[in-house]
Image (cartoon, rainbow, N blue to C red):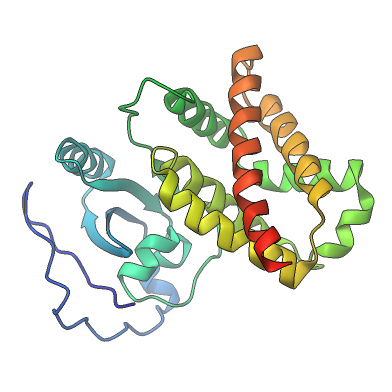
Length: 249
């Protein structure tokens, strides 16, 4: 798979063709080069393209324009490239990272009115992140408190694991309206969990319950509707992952 830098000077500009030559990977940044970055990433097939923006307003405007054109894109902002969404790092061919605080995500507005309440899920997820900047660490604390036997499945230093889960949750939120994408990627994730970590089926329920309770603590107006929507969404996620686990058996 090859990735390309996507420069976008105005709304409606085309991404480069697949035959374009990708740029050489940039050198790892020195500390004084690690500046905040605001961006939009665009998915075309399995490739990601990126545009660096002046601020969140510009990024959200481009995201909206691409969404109106039927494209899949989202805005983001991070304290540095190495802390950005993995999609941006892929687009820029930056192969280090996944450190530091979780980036801000400009979740797109839902355009579907049937099935799960996508907008409610996204809004509550955003509220939870805004209200608790250590929400993933608090989730793991709750999970291990309720099921201490699970601690042995995780590394001693949880920093990388917490960041990985935070990114995966954001990725799921971004793709709620793309079930084909979720089926492929979550099935593969389930396969890895079954083969590499020997995750057992009942553990998915433990994770779901701990995550819902952690989200509920972070969202002041949590209610029965949010409970139902998150329970349904996370049950679906677990089901897709378990398909991969069954295939790996």
